[in-house]
Structures are given as structure tokens and as C-alpha cells.
Amino acid sequence: MAKTSQETNNQLINLIGKGTVITGDIKSEGDMRIDGELNGNITSNGRVVIGHTGKVTGEVSCKNCELAGYVKGKIIIEQLITLKATSTVLGEIATDKLSIEPGAVFSGNCTMENQAQNEKAKNA
Image 1 (cartoon, rainbow, N blue to C red):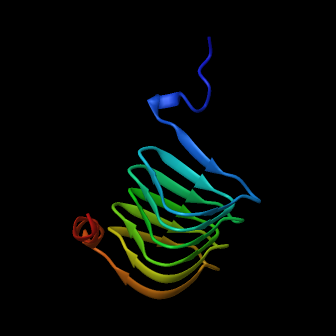
Image 2 (spheres, rainbow, N blue to C red):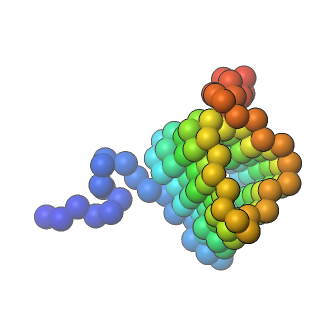
Image 3 (spheres, rainbow, N blue to C red):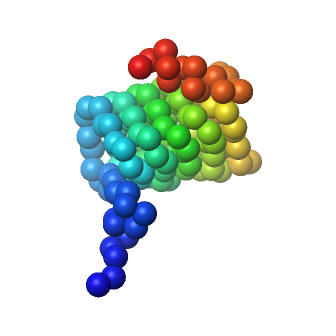
């Protein structure tokens, strides 16, 4: 029997689809993709992808992040955050590595060099 995409690597991929609006905090052990809207905080031990239709108002805390949509709030990334050309970030970023494509909008502060791990430890 073939494995479904959710069973690959024994890790679930959580999806908030376009048109879905969630108010509240989300905590996940696995990866997450947001194409809808979240008014709250995300905490994940995996990768968070915010698609071009995705919108987050709150704190994002994860290992890696690919952002093509909109985030207003604090972003704490342990390893790498990539801001795609369609992305808008209003707030603070704490990360080890930052990649910004031409066309991305970032208004706020950025702290680098393992500061993300220090921020995550302070908030724990």
C-alpha cells in the first residue's frame, strides 16, 4: 500500500486552507502550511510555510520558515527564514539566517546569530 503524503517521514503536515479563518494559538510537532488567516500564535518544531494568500497576526515560532504572505508580529526562527517576493512582514524577526527576495516588504527589526534560540528559551 502506498504512503499518503501525510505519512511520509512519519511527520504530519498541517494545512490551513485559503478561506479558513482561525482565532487562537496553534502548537504543532510537525510542519505547517497556512494559506488562510490566523489571528494568534504558531509554535512548531518543524517548518512553517505561509503561502501568498496566508495572513498571520501574532507570533510565529519554528525551526524554518518560508513566507510568501503577510505576517504582523514577532517571528522567531531557529535556523532559516526566507521572505519571498510577495511577502510582507511588519514586526520583529529573530533568526540565525535570513534570505530576502527582491520585492519583499519588511518593516521592523531583525536580530541574528543564534538570537532566535535565546528568544525561544526566554519565552519557554
